[in-house]
Length: 152
Image 1 (cartoon, rainbow, N blue to C red):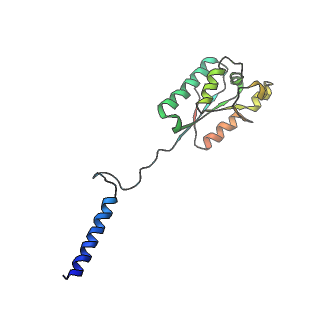
Image 2: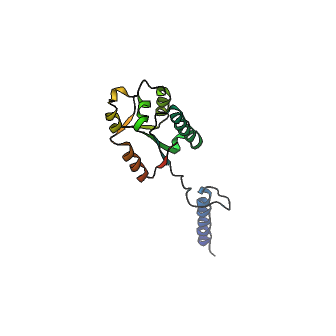
Image 3: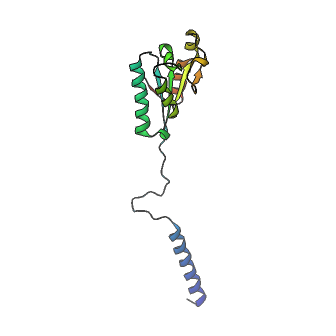
């Protein structure tokens, strides 16, 4: 091999070693593919009962899910209709707990059909609620979007 061939081979080996040093270190059992991200979980809770014990159970379940999985790893919607609608009023006995749930990023949704039947307006309700025409239809829509249905 002449001097030019020797220099060219040396440069090629140097370039290959340089490229190898730029690669992140991997163990023998590590995959080259990028790690998959866990999909965000989605849950829709239903409360259609005016019983404070059932409401407390639902609110505790929601809080436990957020604490166990992490608030940023789960989308939660609480759909309220029927006799449960009264607990969304600004003067209900659970108003503070519902407001705390909203503050933790849970979408609390009131059924306007139920509100109309109970002669309630948005002025009667807690701030920062979401509203849908029909609570049951909202649950169906959420399930079609991949939300898991939970009724405590």
